[in-house]
Image (cartoon, rainbow, N blue to C red; front, side, top):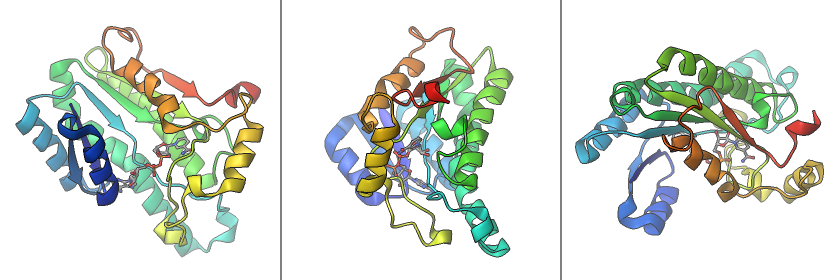
Length: 230
Ligand SMILES: NC(=O)c1ccc[n+]([C@@H]2O[C@H](COP(=O)([O-])OP(=O)(O)OC[C@H]3O[C@@H](n4cnc5c(N)ncnc54)[C@H](O)[C@@H]3O)[C@@H](O)[C@H]2O)c1
């Protein structure tokens, strides 16, 4: 059983239609502590425990250079992007901690090739994804031996990843930019841009206490070979 919190009611509806009784949905802001607490309470009320938590909410800065923003714009964009890409991971990790400890469960955070190198976004996005990698390492140390903490680092993937309201790019979605999708395919050694399903196996592996029992502090890179060329 999967419980999903997302701010996009339409996407949640589509997911519910696809997964039916196998999934519960909750509309809410993953960067709002009250909404996150409500989500954890719902899971405990309905299912009595939590085996795996995935921190995944994200937004993109569309490579916007900080030297091309004024200070106020930069700070507003930073607050929006870091609230979603970093604080939401901390909030769900914190709220789920006692339940993951009780189940000896696992936390999985979505990182990126931008967690390891420059050029996968602008400075704000790259800094946020380095922060996500830092959370994997730090929480893996702090929460061992009770909870395993790992990450998945996708490369460019055809999704609806959105920009920032603070930069007026919140209605721009990554998968809708054919030039970008084409450029990513050309710069990827395997020669194609991934679909979300191409990364699913990495999450399933990390969620499995049987198949990844000795994995913590690991980040599985699923990027078609991009980082191998750095
Ligand atoms: N698409 C890529 O090329 C790529 C590459 C590497 C990593 N990632 C990471 O993958 C993760 C998922 O992104 P995606 O590419 O699947 O994009 P996506 O837009 O399809 O998924 C992100 C989801 O987060 C939700 N969301 C955003 N802000 C939220 C908030 N405040 N509260 C609740 N939900 C919120 C969106 O509604 C959306 O459903 C992100 O962390 C992203 O940084 C994406």
